Length: 178
Image (cartoon, rainbow, N blue to C red):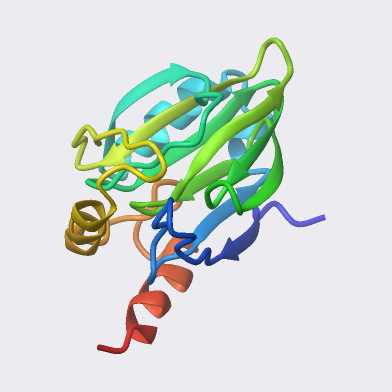
């Protein structure tokens, strides 16, 4: 069995209510080193912070669809399990558990569908910039413009420079044709 996390990437289309991100996919890292850490929450906080993802918080994921148009977000699951709906109302459900990391590009719809009573995540943002919170269908033209302006983070929140995030995000950026 490999010690490296399993990586999934999925690009979601704009569904007319949630823009998602036209260039950058959701990146899911399964079973990161946090899964075996004595204190997974502290591991996520220290790791994210050391790679320039700050403004950390501990809580859960809102039980309603929303997205952020002004920054990307990383979520590290440190307790419990959950089913999350990612990609907006027409997106897909993802099962997550301790040690999993989700890197949500700006515009990515997300919500908690169901969860164990103890489900908790550590969240953070590149550069520590607090994001906005937008509900599906609200001010989409302005949101799409803001999403297009959000720069790539400098480092992968888990592995830093050269991490798996950029295998998917830099390639996504190059695919964009204007």
